[in-house]
Image (cartoon, rainbow, N blue to C red; front, side, top):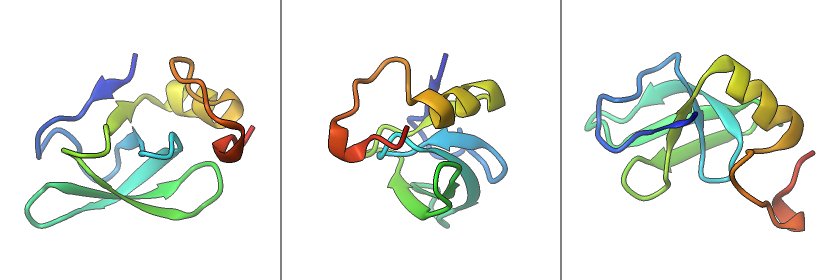
Length: 85
């Protein structure tokens, strides 16, 4: 089950997270104040910046990230314009 990230320090570089576009992302950096997460989408390789307080960041396991990449998140219905699978 994805783990909601609500506070700075709950996610670190090297973690996998779900960004606000529902892409599973590899976290490569955190802002100096810990409030923003920078990642690379595991779906299309794009870079993403998400706010911990505003974007609904969730940590994913590697298995969850693979499911998200292959079929999208199990707990969200994606509109046709943002589906990738």
